Structures are given as C-alpha cells and as structure tokens.
Image 1 (cartoon, rainbow, N blue to C red):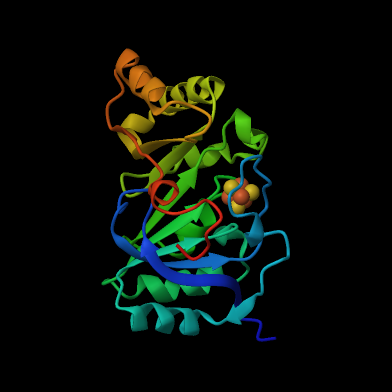
Image 2 (image 1 turned 90 degrees about the horizontal axis):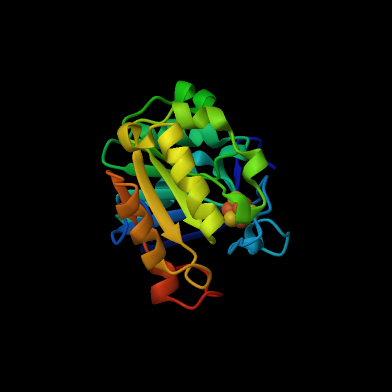
Length: 226
Ligand code: SF4
C-alpha cells in the first residue's frame, strides 16, 4: 500500500448539518477509526471494522472534491486528526483558496501541531468538547480551549442537565464567547432544546448558538452517506 494514503470509508455530498455552514452543501470525506468511544456515538461504523476502506492519496481526494464542484469540504470520521497523512492532505486543500475546509475533530487531539504545519485561513477547526454523558471528558485536550480563534467552532453535544451545566462552566472558564464560535447541540431524545434556551437566557450568553442537528431531522438515524 502507498504510504501516502488515507483510509476513507465514505465520500459524499450532503448538507452540512452543523457548524457555521449548516444548511449549505458540503463534500464529506469520512476517515476510518477513532481514538474515542463516546456512549452516544452515531458513527460506530467508522471505527468498528465493519466498513470497507479505500486508501486514497491526498491528490485523489482533492480531485474527487474538485470534480464535485462543491466548495465546502468537511473532513470527518472517526477522527481525521489521527490519520497519519492528514497534513499533506490539508496542505494540498489549503492551497486552493476557493475551498472552505472544516475539520470535524473530537477535541481529544492537540490541534496546535496541525495548525503550525498548515496555518491556512481557509481551514476551520470544528471541535467537540465531550461532556460527562459521553464518558469521554477525561480525554479532552484542554489546551485546545485556549488555541481556538474566531475562525473556529467549539461544539457541545448536550445529552443531560449535567452536560448543560458543564458546558456553561467551560464556556465561562475559557471565555469562549469571546474567542471562537460556540454551538450547543441537544441530543433530541435526551434533553428538551427549550431547557438549553432557558439556560442561555439565565446566564445571558452572547455569541452562543443553539443548533438542532439537521441530519437527525431530515434523515433516519441509521442512514449513511447523508
Ligand atoms: S469521537 Fe465521534 S466517531 Fe469517535 S466515538 Fe465519539 S462520536 Fe463516535
């Protein structure tokens, strides 16, 4: 196998479901494997070994993206930042200023070395902060909370009132309202989004957005490639 490849399990065009380009078309590249095991993971097939893997070079992935004609690119997983050849891919994508690249990362990988290797304006980090219900909070890279910029997003997937309280604590402690974009995404079956609205009002939180997960509204939970 070519050393300069990345393990891809899906490539498709869909609506960006979350983040600053939510509702716009995006070209998704989903990589194999993840370094976390969240209790509510909805992409288990990205790391449980059941999905066929296609090994692609950065150039092949870039060519696929360009052939699609879609300018928003979402690199997701699994976890994109644990991929051995993610930097060459990012460097190639970053050279094309017509592309807007979102790296959906789980918050457990330090983004600093990646940003240093590829300091491009058209690369945005969409970081999760895994909350207590995920059972993965102890894996969070806390340094990331101090490295994000207005170009980046911190996303909190909230599944309980404990998660909500921790979200508010983290946002305040790291002054995220001032440093980056913040999105709060309720797990619909587990917490009423209106509870989050009330919390935003009670804590007078500015620059923080409630975001309903579009994919879960538009498509069945088990559907892939959407
Ligand atoms: S980080 Fe994402 S892909 Fe990995 S286990 Fe958690 S939800 Fe699933």
